[in-house]
Image 1 (cartoon, rainbow, N blue to C red):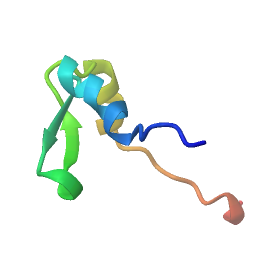
Image 2: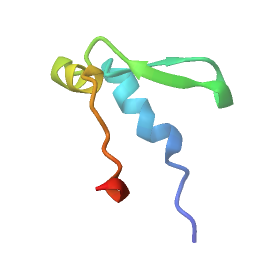
Image 3: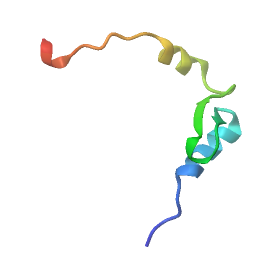
Image 4: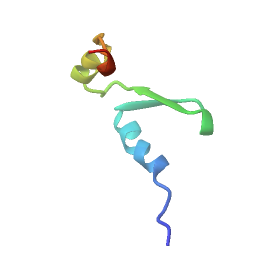
Length: 57
C-alpha cells in the first residue's frame, strides 16, 4: 500500500506562509526565500565558509 504523494504538500505550507516563494511552473518550479523567511537563517547562509579537505590534514 502506497501513501499519497507528499512532495507538493511538503512545499505548499511554507509557500502559503510566505517562508518560500515559488517561481516557474510544474517540473521547472524552483523555490527561494520569501518575505517571512527567518533573517538569521539567511545571514548564516550568506556567510562565506572555508571548507577544509579532511583528507589533506
